[in-house]
Image 1 (cartoon, rainbow, N blue to C red):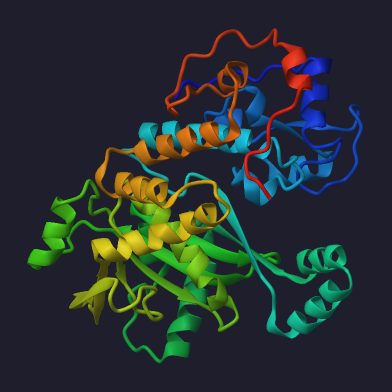
Image 2: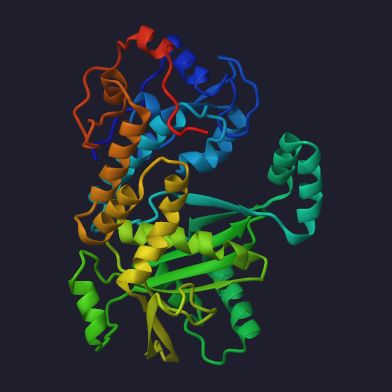
Length: 401
């Protein structure tokens, strides 16, 4: 991925970016003027992003300062981009992710984003929200946004090792475990260095969940079925994951987080393997195979998905798109099979193809994103002089209400 230089936007380009959010900060919704707005690159230039139209939006100064050069899923963070434009930002994001994954295959950050956001409604707030929504749906929706517990999934860095160890010790004590897998800062630092450590944190930065993906090297599993599953797909053995959650409330996020993690893994051709030592396994009994295993001196169960189980998890991410008519059952099955069996990036290309087809994008709009009607990347022409008349006509909505 070739790195670009940051460029200054013209007044017209700033106005176009402002129009896509209705003159609001794309994150917090605050009304801002041309003079108050700051230009936001959704995928930062420092991380391989570009100056294309649909990698740029507007933020207020406070939000831009807090965000720094972190990358978030557009639908998570930029909630005030108008609905008719979001599919175009999504296509641009998918295209970036595809190129990012291909470029980083030897040093893979499979999550791609620096953080992924989640939220849940506490049990004690449910009736209050329900009663408010009965009287006024809009007020009910605003109240959900206000009282929901918000957490984010993000990578851990060496400086986090001490608090991770403290959290793990609490979890081991809670589960009554004698022998620790990660019993000192060195083991955690090694996992951060050679694998991936993901933290689930609340708004006050306290830990409420942890996922340690340790390098698979040295793990010997003599199991014919396991080996056959690996060989019959394009997925490879890369990490073995141990995870835990703090409370029953936090486990309500478990399904959403695990579906995302497994999707990120499979999209980057990594086979999901778990050593569910600190909590129960995510999958149902029919979805995974359990093997008694001693991992780093601890007896437990090595758990890996069957192909049926992987399909079931991947299906959860596309079911809503099928329900709203964005794709057919056949489209969904095709994408899932590409994720499991095809070369890296082919399922993303299929998503892009379906988006361009659903949006009915014209040639000018597709050139602005840099893809053709099949979802493949194309060389963009000079985009400095763009046709303003085409923009004024607006972009067709992607998903029918």
